[in-house]
Image (tube, rainbow, N blue to C red; front, side, top):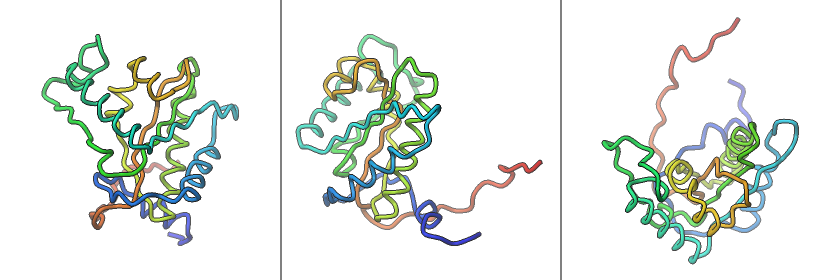
Length: 190
């Protein structure tokens, strides 16, 4: 494989479960978000919206929203739990220690918004890794928490948008586990 800085960042990226509370510099955070804005988008619409949660009030609001969601059986108020009953949904207290949570939302009416938002998050993962800042997907946030209109309002998600990607960002706590080899047979060349 050819070795360059971009490839190194891609291969260094891990999904972390625990972070140091050390703040990420504003210049680094701005660069990470800018990288997200340069992700490919269908028809170049760039219809995404980035919500950065890093204040103590924002963290408290997130924690309370998660606790409310869990009290309601794992889903937004008034809906059945979206996960099978044998799966336990646990809160992710204090952002797993990370100083930042980034939400990427897009128009619910746009058939390509989900893909665009996930591509933007992927760009941010790679940009963050290039600075030694790691990330951790939080699928619980997207799947269970943000379908709730009340929660969307609290986090200032634009009207008509759904949250399609959410991740914690920060400096990793501890050393990464070995990723191990990639699955064989996942590539077909015709």
